[in-house]
Amino acid sequence: MVARSSEVRPSAVRRSAVPGAGGRRGRGAGRLAGLGLGGAALLVLLTGCDVGATFDGFGWPQGGITPEAHRMYDLWIASCIAALAVGVFVWGLIFWCVVRYRKRGNELPVQTRYNMPMEFLYTIAPILIVSVLFYYTAIVQTGVDRTTRNPDVTVEVVAFKWNWQFNYRDGQGQDANTVASVLGTSEVIPILVLPTGRSIRFEETSRDVIHSFWVPELLFKRDVMPGNIRNVFEVSRIDTEGAFVGRCAELCGSYHAFMNFELRAVSPEKYDQFLAAKRDGRSTQEALMAIGEEPYAQTTRPFETRRTEANFNPDNAPAGAGS
Ligand SMILES: [Cu+2]
Image (spheres, protein in one colour):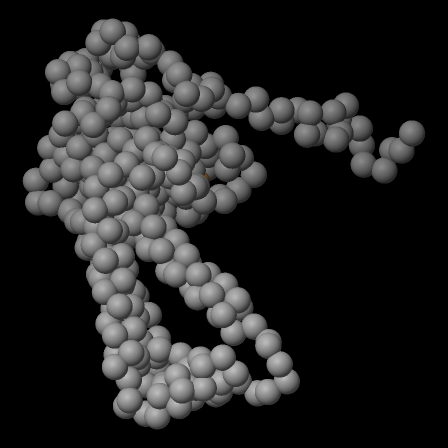
């Protein structure tokens, strides 16, 4: 594949320096191509295994609770394995060259310009790698962004400085009606109750600035825009019951960090009972207790904003009074 040192094997140098005289070179390129194909096959195989858990997700958060979260996680793990495979291959080549072609005398080594198989390989291989990564990214992204015509649950997410309102809707779009609502206050964290096993559509809108709706376990966040933009996304189902913290992920002002909520995933039966209780006019806390759930947030708590401490003129002394 690459010309050998003339000092060690002069005959080999002559053979490989002649263009097209490459039985050996052809075999080398074939071997490399085979290695690439083998690597790709290995990648597909490994993606099915739980390699991610062994390596702590390669830094990606684990514990996603939707099929979409798992698909994004798998894409990340596969991309990391591909990157590592390429890295190991390149590091191997570097070290091999360092050892094999180290300086042995003062004679200039044989130069190997215009090595067509090599040039072909390092042009085609990156294109192939990028194409495969692009293909799977496009597939996963399209899947995550997919919306359906009739999701089982539609919830309107209304963000404002600095809290959330969640409106349960009887249909899709701006013209649908709100049948029940959960509103957060400075004292009470809003709890977004949702069922497991059902498709859920989130329709986002903001009353003031750009916020971002983020539940880390969804492994997904989406900006909440003011004005006429209604950002929409769906999850095909939530797999796990439990309480999951939600946050605003867009710096939206002084109390941005306090803009928390909780996603409470419950069984479909409990969800139906919760919604019925809310429609009967009960408070969110009463409705949660009616279905045997904790009435207040478990994953976060209202923050003490310490507004009075931030007042540097607590005695309301007149300006310029001094001391
Ligand atoms: Cu915000």
